[in-house]
Length: 325
Image: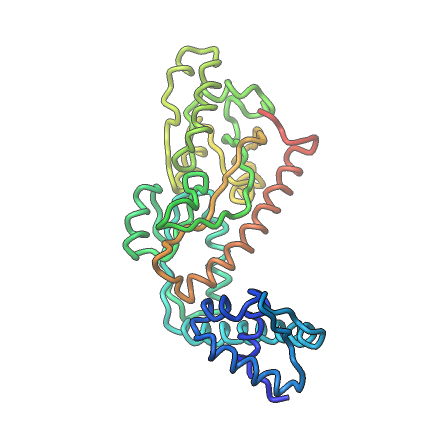
């Protein structure tokens, strides 16, 4: 048979809609042009693939077999087309990523590294800042995508699209020799006796919960301390503060693994509510560039691996159970 992919696409649309008129609207064709295309396919096959009636169309047995294989052929053709166009376009593409949460840095860098190994001609630009700082350049087109706390966005926004990534746990850490060193599993109010370093702006419900817990601290100074004492979107800055002061902070376990292994930081606990939900945000009005599409795919895979590594590390550091600090 000399079957064209275009004809298969038309027949699939008719089968999905059960109507030539509705399929023609979706395909932006006239009903007569769609009918001629399907008739040409039926002549090539040598038998009808649709039974037509006043109520619409139903598929024949031959039609079902044909379109089952036809769908596979269309999917393969689409994937081949994407790969060819993507590889050609990626030769001189530029990727611009906004990072509005430091806990996403590991997965973002993993994804970018994988992409650059596959497409070394792509130029990558990272910008870090708070969510409110990153939204204007995202909306104006200066950024392709923004990685940020997914709880601060909804898909109800007509201008922005959010794709959530797999949530991962965080761990509470202090420096070796800290007054809380050796107090793993201590009551949470004790940490408010020391400055709190937050990895970015805390989402409202988490901040409310922490403030309520802070009010239970015994020392008056602990109850009155600024919460958090430091906000930073830089993992490196958070680590330096933890290493040089008596501050208490929360980091992704995989990000803190080397400092814990070297004995410089000590994990105190990982309460089940202490997580970092984030996602990829883009503007609906602009199609993603080829490099942005590749990056987003790699980021989903990288974050799944990071989340699995984080859970493994918590099982190693707290073998009995997730510690509810």
